[in-house]
Length: 149
Image (cartoon, rainbow, N blue to C red):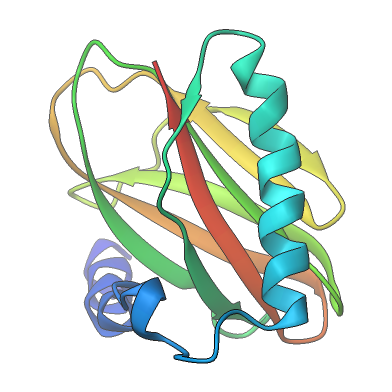
């Protein structure tokens, strides 16, 4: 199972690392704007608890058959919320965090239809993997961003 999960990470990581500023010179589509707005809405709730939202974000195409994986480098002593939101055909999505060995990390969850978030404080600094998956709906674009403190 771990080797399969590690292989999926490697296969999809390249897609998820795309530079969002270079994905479309014409700018974001209406669906991307709605997805980002929805993600920022969730992040706003965490700002009431002292979290700062990172300026950068990425758009990921997801479907029930093809979750996306994103590697992030995190620091112990910080708290993080990873927020994903879709628009249009996305109905229900989920965010899961794994350590560098592919083991799921216990997190707090937030889910509300096409919005989802996973929050935790890493015990050790280093690479972690985020899985963004669509649980219900048709293939869609999801915006991923994070908040920290």
